[in-house]
Image (cartoon, rainbow, N blue to C red):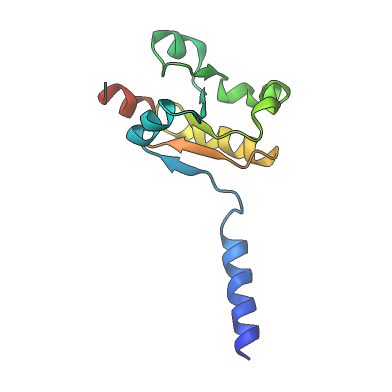
Length: 121
């Protein structure tokens, strides 16, 4: 009976949450990682005008609305740590889902997104 209950509990947990939900990273953690040998790939999923107005140094611009069209280009980063950001988190979350669905497993979202980065400068 205990084994059945444990199995049902595990099944419920697996079905009620996504298997590869993106983790988050703080601005401070990102800065530390950027200064290390293992700097993550940083992807700005905002539109071009937003990117040109300011972005995190070294970020790659891949607008969230076009992320599926850039999967071939992003394939080279499939095994790397990837950090996504936008303004509010909505576009970054959608892009994270698209990347995870394409097999990317090391995807994180920047807490507070670009406004948090700007506030920390």
